[in-house]
Each structure stands twice: as structure tokens, then as C-alpha cells.
Image (spheres, rainbow, N blue to C red):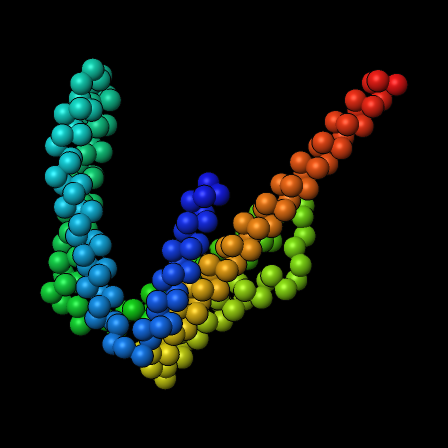
Length: 205
């Protein structure tokens, strides 16, 4: 992933986490379902509107096989877009039915985030070994996710607060990883420059 995109994504997740921690005393479940419904509807409608024009463009100057693939792609795009619109409408009309799934979704998001960061830090930075304390962040994410999923006595505000705190931890972990990557890259550049200078010195001698 591009560093700038990763940084922007981390900042957006951090913002979402801060917002959730601030508004956690409020009844946010209904609002979140409505927002998700709109998020599903808008891209689906846009894709359905744009599909006919893109299909005409794809047909120009293409072989039969390429044209067939284009038609199949357009059909799949239409079906997925229509499904997205239908799901969004259902979420808006019967939002109460989806509210009970939110805690599970929040928990799964945090667990997946914890597993992702553990894999990145344990495998992605090889052969560099990171300090033990950085692994606290993904462990906290895993713990928060499992608490949300399995502790049934949590209130709505507690679940939203845990989720917001988890998103903040996820974002901080991502920013730390970006910082480590920068440090490693700088170290590698220094070593390469040192080797180049050493080789030039030997050649001059």
C-alpha cells in the first residue's frame, strides 16, 4: 500500500475511533445502520447508472471473447450493484432487525484488526525484530473484540466505547508501523551509502 494512502487511512480510522468514544453515551446504533444503508445504496445506484455507458465503450474494437468477458463483467457488476441497493434499502426500512448484529460486527472488525497487525509485525518486518511492547496493541485489539463478542452483559454504550477505543488503538498501531518502516528505510539507505563510499574509497586507492 502507498505510504500516503496508509497514513490517510490510519488518520480516518483514528477520527472514527475518537468520534465513537465521544458519542458512546448516545443511541448510535440506529444512526450507524442508516449511514451504512446509505453507503450501500449510493455506490450501487451510481454503478447501475454508469454501467451502460462503460459497456458501450468496452465493446469498441474488441474481439468476440473480449466482448463476451465484458458483457459478463457488466452483468456481474449490475447484479452486485443491485444487491447493494436492495441491502441498503432493507437496512433503511427494517433497521431494527440489523441492530442486533452490530456488536458482532464490531467485535469481528477488532479481532480481524488484531490478527492483521500481529501478522504484519511478526512476518512483514522480517528479518527486523520489533520490540516486544509493540505487540501489546494487537493483543489489546483481540481482547476488546472477543469481549464484545462473548460478554453479553455489555451495554450499547460500553460496546461503542470499546469499539472506538479499539479503532484508536488500530490507528496508533498503523502509525507506529509506518514510523518503523521509515526508520528501516533510512537505516538501509545509510548502509547502502556507507557501502558505496567504502567501495569508492577502495577503487581510488
